[in-house]
Image 1: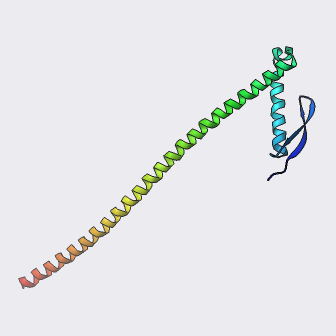
Image 2: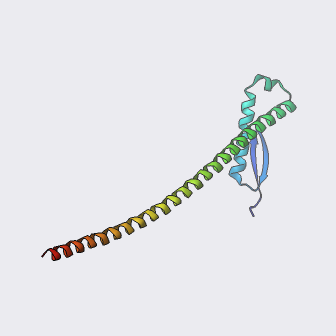
Length: 135
């Protein structure tokens, strides 16, 4: 089991301690993301005029929006992946069927070749018998 770590991060100019099992880089990425969202919100004049509580709610809504858009995209990709896996399964099945048909055809070709050879030998024998009887 991974060991829980605590790391200091700076979010909106203040130092916070983040704790988690995911690793330092992951926790740093989270704080960087939150800082980016705060900076993005601060570009709005309306956001800067809001009190701290409203700013926090708006920030949470923006992060939730990003989350749900990412989740929707991940779900779409999951469905696409399932469809592609089904298509791949069907294609593999078709390839196997084609290989079986090819092998059966090749077996028939060999059988026909043997029959042709036997018939050619019989023709040669019949011609030889005819030539002998003509003599």
